[in-house]
Image (cartoon, rainbow, N blue to C red; front, side, top):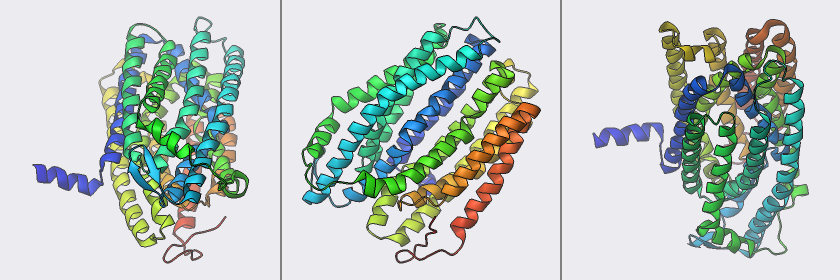
Length: 456
């Protein structure tokens, strides 16, 4: 039996970093199912619409972060190749490399400290304007104070995320994944408690705020704090220049992330404004389940970003390609299997006429959305692989997808409802995903020994 487990783990490539990350995503996904049930029982359909539209509007933080946390991990990983660990809280190495690491840490603290304050007021004011303008359908929903709490907790999390990204770049992928797993568990427990206590829309904000306290406490009362102080103390004249080194790459990532918001987060607000909170809630709940599937399968790639970046810094391109191809095969199996399970569950719920089924979209648009999730896993994997080379060759595809998706969502969604919105999005995903595959697979300009990269 033990040999079978070892063989199964080897087949799927599950190490401790992936294990903790998957466990966090499983908690998130399974917790989403639990929360779906609790929302169906304790929230009205109108409140459900507010709950998921909250999440879509909160995702506007992408305009403030603009993918900088993912860049931090990659740049730190490139520099960390040259350092050695003395203890869990102390590193040593060439002064110029340690100084460059310190400059990245200082960048995190300065930039995200300012962005946190700006984000809070932007979310607070923008949310009040949006929900006040479209509140006629359900005047009895108490959303104002819950919105204030969720804005505060979301803004504070923006301050923690770059620090965790920095630690991941240093190679502490397992430790950060373990911390994220604890965060997901605490979030789930608080959501369950507040919802069952009939806390309504307060659940989202309170759970997120306590999760921030967990992460902040762990960083402050552990060796991670001493490690960051140690690196900070190595600051010197050698610096990573944002303008010269990071910005030429960051602006491409930023455009891709903004396009991602327009693609993945525009559905709920548009449906909320045009068809009301009930339909928006159905879309939100369906997307929540599918995002859980995507998050679990993409854990195979996300936990290897540091490894990919390190192999590139060492010019071990053959090893990089072998690991990447194996990883994509593994995540494809996981993604496809979970999507089939999700569709099967919905069919069973439909067959036995359980009320919770009405909280999801009908089966046809749901299947189409599943197809987009399956296609996107390849696009996301290719993009992650190329971004580790500090390149963003899919920039044009991301921007075009964002523009066309906005047009499709606003026009087809308005005249043909959810079905028109989903059909338009599916067609765009398949066409542009295929174009991305062609760009990735065609013979490209030689870069290194056996790695071929298409420049923008």
